[in-house]
Length: 497
Ligand code: ADP
Image 1 (cartoon, protein in one colour):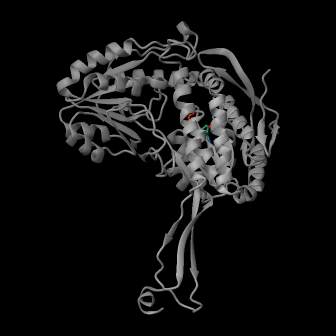
Image 2: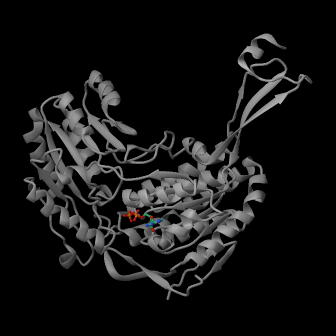
Image 3: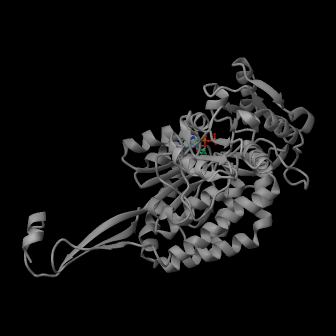
């Protein structure tokens, strides 16, 4: 039995309640990847206490030195990328190339950006209103950060939280998703081997529903950084709000890609295919609504259907697989339930729609395409988190933007067009945190902030330098070197020295 422990205060320890749970391969559910600690509130308490105790010493470590540890993290992720990528595939099902080329690469890039940030962590100097006075703004750690992450990007999303949180001088308690505990442990091993000191990063595995409330409201945690579903985000925000904890939320979306009549056709087909069906649609950036101009709608539908039907499903470790299984049986049933929902509302299923668990042995679902979809239908409004794309028709550019915006979400939208005027009008008009022009909605650049508007988050941004704002407090400092007592005020500033 491959039994794994929690990591608290520099020790691998069992959960105090003595319970465990298994992680299984969604492509072949009889394969157990390991047995993990089913933590309870007592384990949350121990992890928070360890993180709290280690925080002052870590904050006192010069930021460039903290950055050097992250340099080593990046090196170790490079060295171990094949093993970690295989673990991701076996644990949550995405194909190997995505795990290796995207998930792990983005984590490496994040670590490298943070190395540089260790030598910047820029504050500000500001001209004082008075003579002989100096005003500046410095950054300080927030304290103990609780990181709660989902299973769909089980290296990238923790790295977006843990690496900048550490770089900024915070200590961390990390709870990976219950579907990907082994990947979480592989990341922890990298951090430990890179030299992160005892107590600075801690991990507890288990079910969010069981430990979540204690985790979020714990007196020793200062901030919760969460990525996951909207309902859980709401729960966390209200729990954290009651305690006035800081909270950062990256939630779901119902992204739209506009394909205009002047789009480079093949490029748009390719981008919508990857955006809609990559990671089996299990991405908060999935392009699950494609809004096509009526002039090319029929041609697009034919060409897109042919490509969707040609997608090869299979185990993510098999070379030819393009689409892997869904993460678990519950998700398979949930996605399947949307087929009836769409049809009942009058959408037309063009292809797909079947569970393939009996034929293929794992939680596979056929890549599915709906047409005749109206913007108000549930399949156009709700995040399905599966390989299900809805095609919507627009009769003008303006109409297309309206349809794209007709959602409660706004994370990563896109447009395919060759018209520069439409490009800029779309950049302004799409109500979203990320806009992709002539490229798929899925994918991130580490150099730019990532996050959404409306129900896709609570306003903070992650990725690259933006995450420094997420994980630091600003402290304003005024140094009066006049030797004179002055009451700072606007009029005084103008008149007194
Ligand atoms: P998903 O549907 O993608 O699994 P969830 O929001 O349920 O999304 O889960 C994302 C993460 O949130 C997981 O690590 C999960 O354990 C955790 N989680 C689930 N429920 C809670 C909760 N009530 N409080 C805190 N964390 C939770």
